[in-house]
Amino acid sequence: NTKTNLKPLHLKNLQLNQFKNHSQSSFSFTKQVNCFVGNNGAGKTNILDAIHYLSQTKSYFNHIDAQNIQFNADYFMLKGNFEKQDSEDEIQCNLKEGEGKVLKKNQKKYKRFSEHIGQFPCIIISPTDTNLILEGSEVRRKYLDSSIAQYKQSYLKTLINYNKALKQRNALLKQFAERCYFDEITLEIYDNQLIELGSVIHRERTEFLKELTPVFNKYYAEISESKETVNLAYKSQLNDGDYSELLKQSLIKDRASNYTQTGTHKDDIIFEMNEHPIKKIGSQGQQKSFLISLKLAQFEFIKHQIGFKPILLLDDIFDKLDDNRVLKLISFVNKGVFGQVFITDTHAERSEEILSKANIPYSIFNIENGATI
Image 1 (spheres, rainbow, N blue to C red):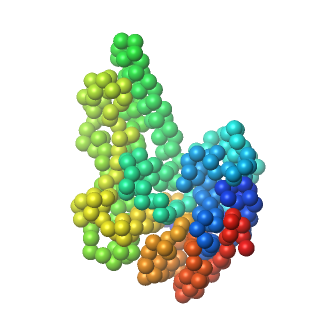
Image 2: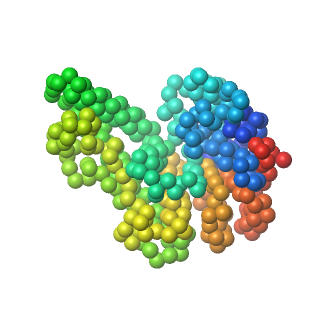
Image 3: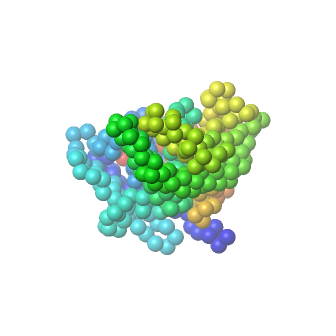
């Protein structure tokens, strides 16, 4: 594979204006480890989120864009320069209150945000990832989808069209109920769209999880040094049924509920440990190791697909792991597993100690009240 010798993605600099608690901050970064240290609430995580914005067109932590504008301000602006192989691109994201979000690449405005996804991939590991275990299936589907979208542009389009067809089919079911009629021919149009698009989504998700699971197992064994067996089980109605048959079988239920009861919008991943859901049996430490392994596997898988290393964002990870595991994680940077890494930590001394022990070039930025000191 000729792709694998490509240089890691590198964010050279970053500018934040009126973004969360940053009035105006700007940074220049090293190609390896960049560490933001400061007290809780200083604005360290917001810097990682700004990088996530420029990569994924949205916040990792708060999906309501307007809520990321600084208090008492009416807009935010984020700007960063990414070096990818031998070219450099300036990405800018602006949001003005009451207006739409604007994303530009080299001053040129994107028509669709989906065109940007996957160009400058990043993976984030954060304490909020426990939602993946604790919350409903939608959170896990989003994880699946954003993973696949980072290396397969066409997938996002398929997903958008599937959701559109689903919405229209649901609206039609509601119309049937309200107006007391039934139109099989119009319904079939949406059925066919769902069948075609849903089958593609199911195939991509199946493929992704099949290839991700062994990588995930490898990381789990390494990080946790444990004897448990872990697994990612893909739960989908389409696993054991033909989609058109499933739609036929559930038509009565669909009409009673005004909602499409079968399809990939009901999919889930079951996180298993020793063949039980980890939510029920995993200790906090096991759950943390599980999630970190999941994200590292995602990183490696995407790297393999696109041929270069995405950016890795590690939010408050030292607090959650013992020193042994942290050193193990940081040693991955040394082994060349990761490219550019961004870390937040509440203890400056701890970061310094870990990074100098690991013997890697690093920069440390002290953050206080949304400013660098």
